[in-house]
Image 1 (cartoon, one colour):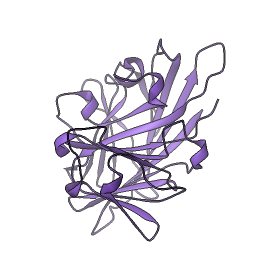
Image 2: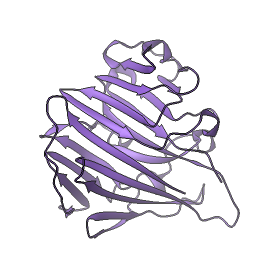
Image 3: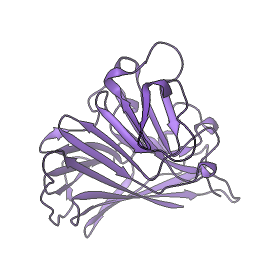
Image 4: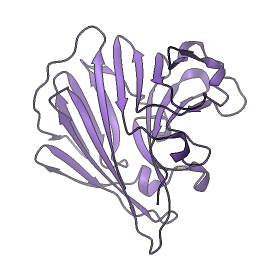
Length: 260
């Protein structure tokens, strides 16, 4: 299956100047894309993880924390109940083969022994709206069919205001009381949540194909396929938001349809 994710990173005051860019190979295992005043970086040695996303040198992502599971943006198979924890190394953190093909950077992962999945990632800039486009492909290497949903996990610093258009049903989970529904949108203020020392600090909800986050004078927008509530993996949802204890970081998560 293939899913496409569009990342928009917009300053609240002024939109960056659009321009065509060519990806660059940085030192070591890292690649970069510059588009207008955006800087986007991927580390092929670390699961083709998005390791930096900046607007005018302002960092949006959570970086520099002690564990990979607290930093950057990654891609997992859903539901998590099948593989539990920790993340599957072949998909999440082992090196991906990589290369630049014209305006695109391509990454090919190894096959995970538990799920028999292999991931491919393609990333490039869209000059039309100063955005980054990501294509995720999940390949089943088993001889028989299996079902999964695509799941992107983007970690940002634990502050700011998140919002998305509500789909079917209400937000659920331990963080649901920290959300507020206004004019058909669900709002979550990370500076005023109820994170404590019990349970999983998360809420999930059906959405309508986008999730935005405002922080430090910037607006970050994730745009993805809108799915029906019944199309999500069991106990999962199109939009999921997790905040770590102490507000050290927050995960802005989106999932696609659970299909064979």
